Each structure stands twice: as structure tokens, then as C-alpha cells.
Image (cartoon, rainbow, N blue to C red; front, side, top):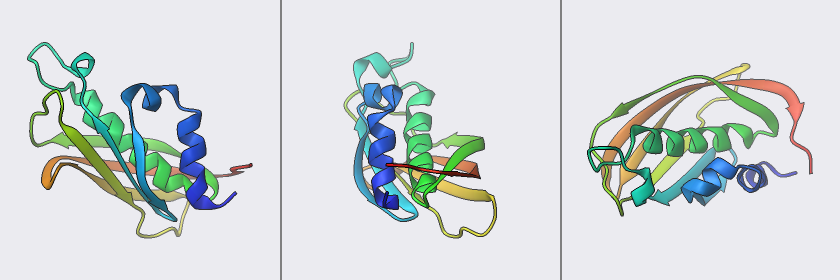
Length: 135
């Protein structure tokens, strides 16, 4: 299986990301861009998007990009900085670019944007297993 095909397989087997309405916008080796629209059922008690929404979008981009190298890669630590509040109807895009693949650990920063505005920064560490993605 080609690396850039793996995120599409992952998404097809991911009911949570599907519920969120996440779509793959671009994908290539070491890079994945995903997007989604904030819905009413994603809002918190203050009428803003729950923090888990931008976190989950970034985490999905992170996982998809990390797995394009053909081995199962799993998140072992992550955090997020919420910069702007998000509203119902906002369209968010998260892009993950893996700069280097040298060890079993990968470190990455994912930007979440609303149009050109940076709304969150996600930082993640991934562990690369020896298990191959299969057809």
C-alpha cells in the first residue's frame, strides 16, 4: 500500500473522525491536511466549540501524516494551545508535516486554522512500531 493511501484507509475505519465530519484535503508522504466544519452538537455550555474539537482534528492530521511512512505509528504524548474561540459554522483546517524520520519517535507541531487565522497549536510525539500497514 502506498503511504499516501494509508490515511484514506484509516479514515474509512475511524467512526469518531467520520462523526466529526473530517475530510482529507491533501495527503502525501509525511504530510496530511484535513478539514471540518464545527456543528451545533460540538458546542460547549458557552456556545463555543468544545476544546476537544480542534484537538481531535489536529490529532487526526498528526496520526494520518505519521502513518504515511507505512508503519503503524501511535501517539504517546500530545498537548494543545487554544488561541481563539471557535463558533458553530467555522471551517477548520489542520496540517501536519513530518520533517524528519530518523528514530522510533517523531515530534510534530500541527497548526489549526480558521481561514488564515491560527486558532490552535497542537504538539505531539508519535511512536513508530514495526508493524506494516497492509492492503
